[in-house]
Image (tube, rainbow, N blue to C red; front, side, top):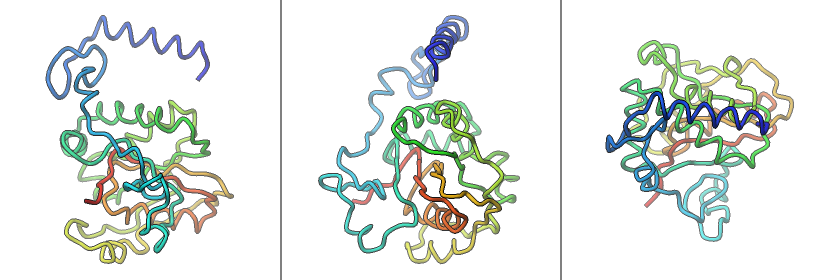
Length: 236
């Protein structure tokens, strides 16, 4: 973003703060144009300082963890903004099931700030099956990816990757069962020609969905796939 564009964006934010103040989503205190007040934003749970660069699980010295050494995922790296804990879990649920899309805008911009060091070519949102999309009315991964792509100035690729079949609910399945459930669930119609893709989703639980989608993207020429999520379920 150029200096002029940054100044224009800052002016718009100040104007919105003045004309359209809002209340904090979590505590209802005045928060200007922001979704959260400064106090609530500062109290959100934080990812561990030392984590595996492949899967974002805690790992001493930021080294690749034993699990990723034994069974390397198809994706090359993972970035997560928060651990999947209260109140982040409730905020994501309000986004997905309460249609509060302002949450996607807020977190998408925060993800963009957290990924400034990533030099990627395309942003790819995790696709939803058409049945699930019709049921929900929107793809939360796409809504998160929009501000991320806009803030970073990276092209958003919405049409190249699709979900071929609905999968049974993943909750309660083992990692092996999740992977079997997702096998061949995705399709792609593009040759990515060695480009670096940011695969965006709301939550990574076991990482099985991201792994299978990354496998499909790699089969279609992706040179590197970095998974970028709002929240990561951390192992105890």
